[in-house]
Length: 428
RNA sequence: GGAGGGGUGGCUGAGCGGACGAAAGCGCCGGUCUUGAAAACCGGUAGGCCCGCAAGGGCCUCGUGGGUUCGAAUCCCACCCCCUCCGCCA
Image (tube, rainbow, N blue to C red):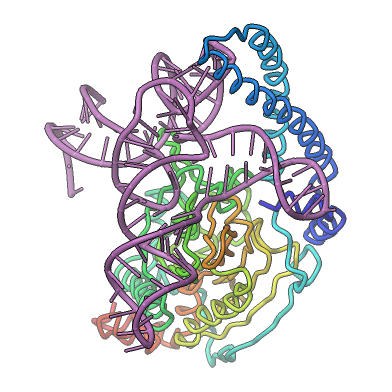
């Protein structure tokens, strides 16, 4: 949610900024409603002020046994006028709220303009794509052959795009998120959280998935609970509607969770294998910071995600997303893409964003100032650290051997019960 | 699924038609004392919105929304949320 005061102060800047990301929200209409609201509010408050004063007089008069019927009659009439004004204000409020909830965040000035991926800026390459001296396989071929990925069973259970990992495949999945959690907890100082995977509607509103993306979410209607599309939702909403003491900042959370995405309408693109699935595992990082600290924290968080890929020996590149490609709540986002040697393409495995105060405003997360009076909205950041299904692809494809087996990156061996290869006798 | 109990400031918790934005305690901030700290003592300490250049003024908020009333934290109705117990279940 944007700050209505800022929109009022500089509507042209807001419109320009939103245009950079291709948004065409009705800012003028919003301001018209806002002006009308304030006009009515001022009038109503004036009447209320008078009514309150008179009521006090009535109370005093009655206490002394006086007669106040004239004042009482007048106030009845005033109350009626107030009621009419209040109703108008309430209606406008609700319209303003609806509009405000659908306006995306303002992109940071520093990020590239543009609305398609060509405008993303590649800011870093790390590691060299491997050259194979044999014809590399794609992950689904490897997976089926090694018996570690079973798409047919997944679809028997839940339909297409629900993967099923098996044997060393399932173990590799568990090894990956265990390894990542340990790294972020032990080396990067995040507090580990094991959150619920279903959340209330208010949470989805707070982080910005609702109202716009409701169709992409899984909803358990009987309970009005949503399956989380990312652990960002529960992690950010831990502080929803509450005050944080400024001294507690920065707050850093890490959680593993499965992520559930209907992504209705996305069929036809990347449908094969693990690239686009309805359920995948992810380790997610979330931070709350002072406003002045958020950009530094963003770079730091990017570094934390990168370290996972470096430790796994996966070649990757970092993109700074253009204004049109960042998510609804984001002000600035880095994507990390990992190289998949079998498919021969870059796959997005992490998205690291600062949302500024956008989510804090929506979710009612405020900080009490350490010194002096008052509160402020903290900045929220979220980043994948990292997403699993695609990292899994990269590992299987990049570490495949000529004999059809797959080597385990050294960092994961302890998490794989000591196994160094998948597919060799006794290994899978 | 059944039966109860409850939602008041950062927290605990009192208040149950006007003097209540709200006692008290804790916490926090400032001060006195102290070499420093602790203790003790003194003082301060909710948030949001509107008008205003400001100083300042006003409105709203005791879970949410309605109702009764000149006046509601207090009375009535509906809803939401939390907790406890029983049942079922990993």
